Image (cartoon, rainbow, N blue to C red; front, side):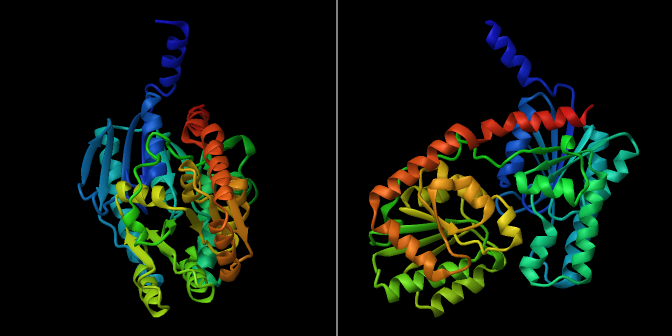
Length: 408
């Protein structure tokens, strides 16, 4: 065995003897790609990993052992509306998570609780085990005060309550994992965390999974070009703005050579399908809903342009969207609105439309449709940027470093 091989083996076992419990409430695992990548990396580094998450389509089993990782799932009342709905959703989730945490504590044990928001309530479970000397790592996926404003366009009592829960979460955490520099700044300013206790671990794509497959021309519906979107179908994702851009291109500009393919699910999916039909786009827009990876990657591999119509607001401006990095990994040119973290991720792989302006968004799409050379150059830039700087392989050591710091 060579010296380099020995060093690599030692590095892979940096967390040997550590026992980790990851709690995530909004998505099942391994469907939640970031959480699954983190779990696999921690396991590879020598840690024993258990996960608590909700059930979901294709992930209905209450317990599974996958790749040596223990996954415990619980039911979840989804798509809450109003204060009562959220109380039911979060209250039942808290009860299930508490029960499963104690079950895992006695069955497998853990040294560190790794809580992934939303919501900012997992500190309530961490508090129970801090009495036994367990550490709490807060994995900051969403900035919930900004998310609340984006969804409801107001502040008020519940916004103040969310801010309070966020503050308690930061206060309770031994270490904070931020998904980008904007989130790190929030942890330091709003959360009053020391810079040394905050680690940026971006959601870089796993290039062994995110890769091109054989295109399926039939997705284009006998048209020349395919515009693809992958992601959540909610109000703040701006899919209605994308539909407005599609309508402008097809009926104002006469571009009957374009098909739109939208992959993903969410609380607004039914409403968006209805809106698409009302706008006369039924034959030009395909909604795939939540789809397996094979369909997702076939759609992206077939696409000529990929889009991110997230509205420009405080939430989206400061958040890194996984879809942008996946588009780049597959070498696709992008059109999006001009937001801080979206521009940082994509740089020259994207064109940037005026804030929340569907007509300018449509113009940017048409610019690329007319310029195949530009599309190729942008796609190549994005692919190389991910391969050389932003893939998960570059984030994995930062995750391990955060864990080593928490264990001090």
